[in-house]
Image (tube, rainbow, N blue to C red):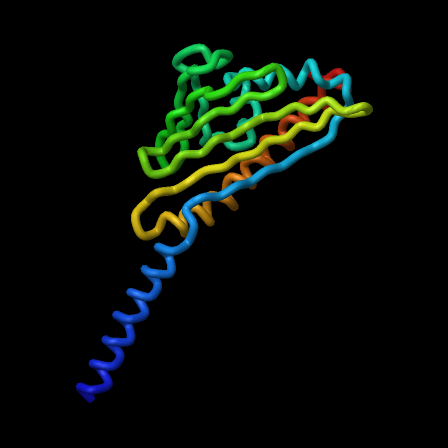
Length: 176
């Protein structure tokens, strides 16, 4: 009886250590993106989202996400906060160009993500791309968190894109 308890205990310890090692070996980085083509004449309406302060309108389907800027969001270095059910994230505007804005989200020192809105005018349409890349440096489980973050952020990007497209459709129909 004692030998089988010892074997079960040893097996449990080896299984736990194996899971820790496998988890520690998972990559801590991730990427996600979504893109949508819209009418070329929507360029001017979409350009307002190059000012990250307007991103709160894209988060409205998610009422527990609150984005507010403490300094100028339409300038590089603009700083704000994203209140999330899991905590508070620092938001900084890293790059601002004529057709692109990149912001950084930082949760503590363990998780950093760069989210980019890119507008690509084409011959007959406008391609809108939302993308994210990030890293999670939580000890031992950072790789697992990164896998979850990739899925979660991809869903958030799709929600933001759907909200943007809905706003464009409402404007076209004269309801906004």
